[in-house]
Image 1 (tube, rainbow, N blue to C red):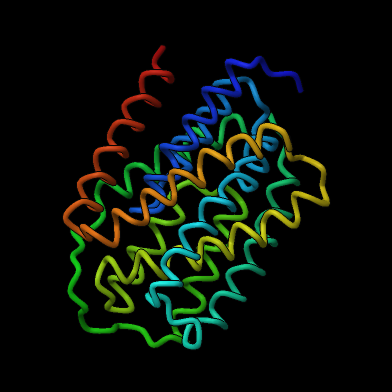
Image 2 (spheres, one colour):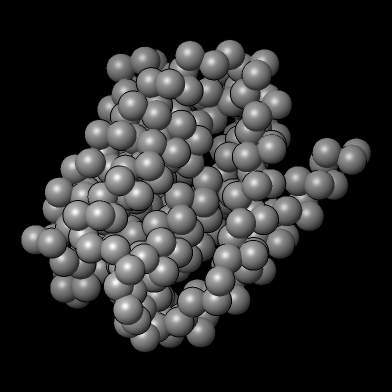
Amino acid sequence: MELGLDSYAILTAVAFVAGFIDAIAGGGGLLTIPAMLWAGIPPIAALATNKLQSSFGSGTACWNFSRKRMIDWRTYGPTVAIIAALSGVGSIVVQAIGNDALNLIVPVLLLAVAAYIVLSPRMHDEDAHQRLSVRAYMPVGGAIGFYDGFFGPGTGSFFATTLVSLRGMGLTRATAHTKAFNFASNLGSLVIFLFAGHILFLLGLCMAIGTTAGALAGSHMAMRFGARVIRPLLVTISLAMTARLLWNALA
């Protein structure tokens, strides 16, 4: 597929903003997926290319949190493996759906994710009571991983919300573990899409540069300011994307 230089520049800039937002609160796919669809990229290619660029962003944020020793790899290693495997399954399933059907499904899913993020319970930095054990959380993480392989946008927000509400983590610690889970789900999905040949590599690598830079800036801000910046930014971006999608649908 041929894209102009202006499209590459715009999509790379969008990826920077998405990487910044995703490192702080998740939901970066609410920017990148619609942006690629607006550029005329078919849905399956947009989903596949998004996995390539987002793997760089989530990997950068994961590395940044990990070197600060904010991720408990020993405890959550098995959960990471399950998430990666089920994300791959999700990517296999989505390829069985035609582009015409995806053109109808994707906008509905985007609106549903944005609404969920806006309406999700208020989260804070204090650890709370754990409703689920690490083992009991694995199916929850696996289900979110499957969703990420099938579609993706909002995955980071789902991980963060469930880690806070079910595992009792404070939001900053939940955000750190979210990056590990998100990186695993991105890699699991990316492997499947690589073999299927749906990825636009040049565009994906250009966007990866943007999302990596954004993820570095965003993860530093998340560690410095915590929940007081994470929650307002997430809600603001979600509302903006919801308004944009509604405008396009009505127009």
